Image 1 (cartoon, rainbow, N blue to C red):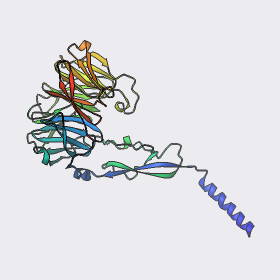
Image 2: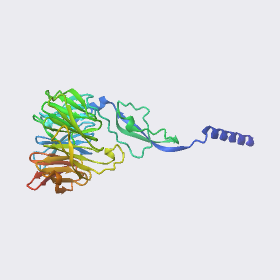
Image 3: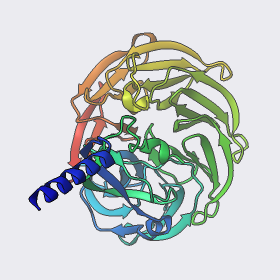
Image 4: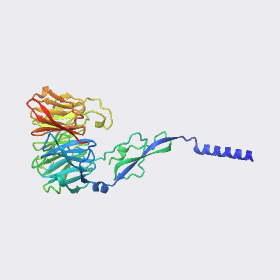
Length: 415
């Protein structure tokens, strides 16, 4: 009997060994997306009490107020009537927000593919007005969790928005071709009037009765004669990876990762292409002053979709006196440039970890560095009439203009 049981056990072991066919297994971290629908996202927009800043983004100024984007979270509103002691007023919860613009006490902001409107005539009682749905062409920003081996998108509806990840450890068969790993980046792709001021990284610009909003590849034109009910009236293709917008003399200057594109808006509802200036692939904001355009080009993997960038970051100065034939005239190497601004003979450059740099630009062939502030993660500036505003590292820094440069008024960290 014992011999019979032994033989039977051996047969079972042989059978199991053959059925496994020498398969090997490993423990892997599997991430499944946590999502919400577009309707749920829209329903989450609201006015809230002041919040801590997670990641400061772009900055906008309107009358005595400063609006600071908290990347993909919403907008912090600051009362700046006393620049030495600015105070937080409230927070606009706007999922997937990066830009704002204001005219006549109406604030316009992006929320993913939507344009949203708020009535800010009473800042202590802001009213959400509504959405203009699916008018912006954007790609969802996805935060990838660290240490994940496999993204499980089997039941993912690509119309929904990823807001987090459920990560579990599973035993999976080892695959030589890594068949379970999914490239999620590929899978998830799918001037006038009572207005405020934005920085060089802005994608929104109001000129008279029109709002121009740059998305990933085009200019979207909104008629805002009825301030509380913007209407999209046109869209004009620019190029892939359009990033910023600047206005001067009935012209829009669009910064993209591959060049600067110039459009005429003499007919404001129909931007018309004039010319372009091409450069190697960089992140690229642009500001214009008279006959010159100033473009900061930032190298790095974030500007190259992860690819290696061999060229150095730089400032390029472009002669646009012949608007149909822009010409590069000067190049200055930088460390990590982001936003920039101009006030008279002063050129301000946010050079990332190298801080805020102030140049005298009277002779563009020989820019003179006059000041360098060790401002944490200098990101963008707005040169106002009476002061300079800078955002970086969750801190708003304000400066007075002086005869020789600028001096700090206050530093305000949102925490």
